[in-house]
Length: 115
Length: 113
Image 1 (tube, chains in turn orange, cyan):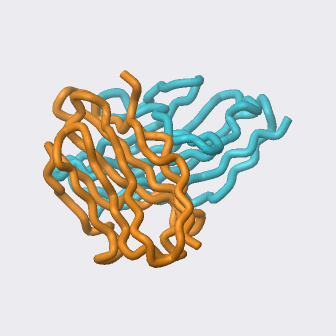
Image 2 (cartoon, chains in turn brown, blue):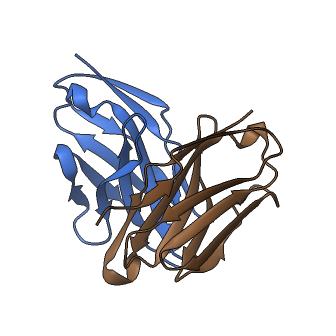
C-alpha cells in the first residue's frame, strides 16, 4: 500500500482565497483524522471521521473550515476564506481500529502558507 | 475531556546515555497510549503503543515506554541514546468511548555527540 496520500505537499495562497487540501487514506481503514501542526499549538485535532461520518468537529477553528468525506477513499479539508493565521502544516491520518490496528498512519502533510 | 501533557519542550542527552521523555495523560476509562516520532519535514511515525497487559512496552529503534496507571504516566525511554534519535516526539491517547486521538505538544529530543 502507498500509505496515506496528501495533496498538495505545499500550498501558497493569498488571504481571502479558498484552499482545498486532499487526503486518500489507506485502503480498508475506516477512521480518518485531520490535524494541524504549528509551533505555538503543537498538533491539534481538527476533525475525525468513522466510516465516512464526521464524529467530532469540535477542533475546527471556525466556520471558515469545513471537511468532507464523500467515500471511504477520499477526504477534503477546505478553508474559505483563508487567513494568514491559517498557515500551518495540515496532516491527515487513518487507522483501522475495528481490525485490531489502533495506531494512526500519517500522510506527509500539506504545508500551507497564506500571505 | 481527555488530555495529554508533555512537560518538557526540549530534552538534551549525551550520546550513549539513557534518555527519558515524559508524558502524562487524563482520560475516562482505560486508555490506549502511543508514542510517535517526527523527523524534519516528515509526517509522524509510530513508535509503540500500550493497549493492555505488561506495563513495559517495547517498540521500534530500541525505544520502550512504561505505563503507570497510578501516576497516569507513559514515559518514553531508551537505555543508550544515539545521535540519530534526535527528533520531535509526541505522546498520544485514544479515548475508547469515541475513538478520539489527541496528542501532546511534543518534546524535541537533542542527542549530543
